[in-house]
Image (cartoon, rainbow, N blue to C red; front, side):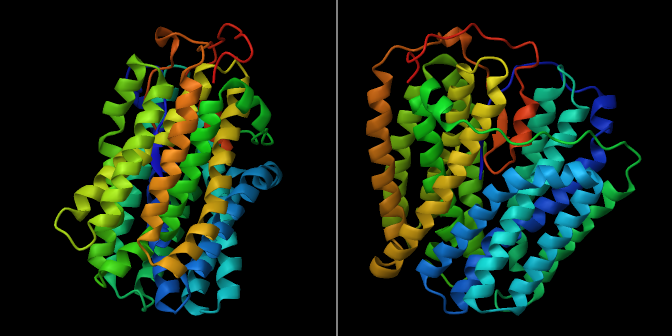
Amino acid sequence: MLVVCFSVSGVSIPMKALATVTSLLVSTALLLIGQGMQLTLLPLRASANGLSDFMIGISASCYFLGFIVGCIGVPATIARVGHIRSFAVLTAVMTSAILCMDMLDEWQFLLVLRFLTGMAISGLYTVIESWLNSQATAASRGRILSIYTFILLISMALGQALINVGPIESSTPFTLAAVFMVLAIVPVGLTRRLAPAPVEATRVGFSLLYRRSRSAFAGALLSGLVVGSFWSLGAIFARSNSESQADISWFVSAAILGGALLQYPIGLLSDRIDRRKVIVMLCFGSALASVAVAASAGQSWHLPAVFLFGAMVMPIYGMSLATAADVSQGSEFVEIGTSVLLLNAIGAVSAPLVLGKLMSLLGPPALFWSFAVICLLFMAYIALQVRGARAVSISEQVPFTAAASEVAPASFDLDPRGPEHTPTPRAPGTER
């Protein structure tokens, strides 16, 4: 789930600053290759085992529910045992869950194991991002965040290609995903750098986010509903059109690449006009692209349609986060950013339950037809907000860089605006 966020433009990272996080970034790359593989492998294996689309949707909701629980509960574990031990333990849990999914076909085990993987990966993101924050300076913070996001993108895309090492029904792709995750422990385990201080408990303020920006609130929820469901059920849609694993991996990769390659042009546009208008345009583009994906199955232009879908829908989370950050006051950023993230996760928990059932009743194309309807409804709501007065001028908007939606609240300690960012207090109710 890779999208656009924001940053202050700055100088390149000094080599000394980058060297302090090299081992952590190598571990992150290895971990995310395995994570990228399992996100696609698990729904495909479940489908091959005869589970309905509805049950696969429930398992996806369990994953995102575990993600939320991990965001809230794991920081206490890190405080007790430290970052390196937490990384090793959470990686062991993640690896064991993936291997068990290969051995246990019953749906009851699948739900539990997917919950555990969601909780473990959110905890691992917390470890990684809080560690990066401890090594970042005001000058390097935004650039380190960009490099981290680039590694997320490349690693997860590589994971899509590697699912083709063996049939979905075999143990080979699951074993390879587990190997990458286990190897992720090695660079962190051998580092001579001191681990950072414990992370703080997660602070959430949904009402504060809603007061600051209804548009950001709606955009975060929309992103979870659509992007979360795509990660959960998109591979099932692709498999209905082709039994080739290569075709399925290309389907998912096309969406990732679309979101990645168009994020900077979209980000630059959002620096020059009201970001809420950009969200409206992305909603409209997402609706059109969803219709194109549903209608183009089996056609030569199917992958370009999927590419366009990723390009339109994946930046919505980052646009929402940037819109909220534009009106955050000083220390509010962590609380508001966490609220955007968890609201996105709540959408990802709820949507697969409904959309999985629709796919079972109406067929796989119902997934993208539903996306089109959802995007149009949210477009109408956000368009109503654009008519209101805005609390910030275009020149006051935070500049753009890359970030990911599947992160942990610790990532918002990497506030790329820098510690000196203390915006002028906004009049309540002016940013919608």
